[in-house]
Image 1 (cartoon, rainbow, N blue to C red):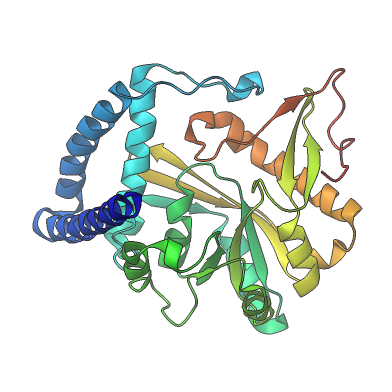
Image 2 (image 1 turned 90 degrees about the vertical axis):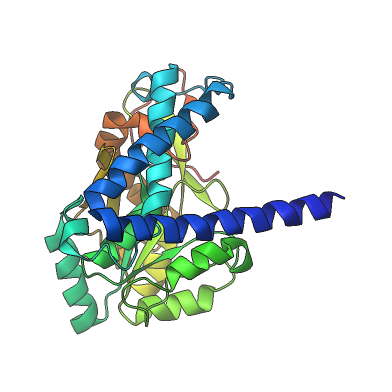
Length: 315
């Protein structure tokens, strides 16, 4: 019986996903991007309100004071609506390259990405763009491609778990000759992809795999995955930090940092130091937009506090 119910829910979700795909794209053609977003704003507000009214707030977690966000119904509705807008934009990977769509997103540090692309083409130096689950990350790859950079992403699961609707959306992305995603079982293909001088998005706040402990100056620690540092060292890739945030309910900003040379990360000590530098670069956006976490980072408080950089042991 459970299998029948699960199958029904899967088919219903897929039907709703395809229905929404064609509905929103048709609305964009008929009303333009402004009219479509006007309809979406009203619809998502009602949907988010109904969902949050019937849902209990999440219990508080131990975390720094600068990460604590409002738990009011209004703020929860706003955060949920932002997640719905991200799902909406997934329906337009091919149109996001149009000027009217690109006007919705600011790309800071494009010169760093362009320099890295030239290095990849001329010297075969690939790029690993590291990020944490903050902001509209699930459309960061789409926006990056819309700005002319053919990036792929390392994701969990497998092709089947990605779902039919998402796989259909993937086929509309710019640069169809470049893979969209890589899964954990495709390490060889991933390395070959990087060694060809390509760009890869990879999260460093994954809660599995080998990690290092990273401390802040106010006595809190978290754990960052070493996968990006190890992959950069293996392939000679440069590490660059990518952050993305909502600047308004339908306005976005992506920021790309200057690179960290991957060939300088051969040992655990260097991986830990790389992760420390990554967190230091990420903290300003984390502190400025704590309400935009998709997957909250897990924190522990040290007693007595220690200075950043002193906690580097493997977990």
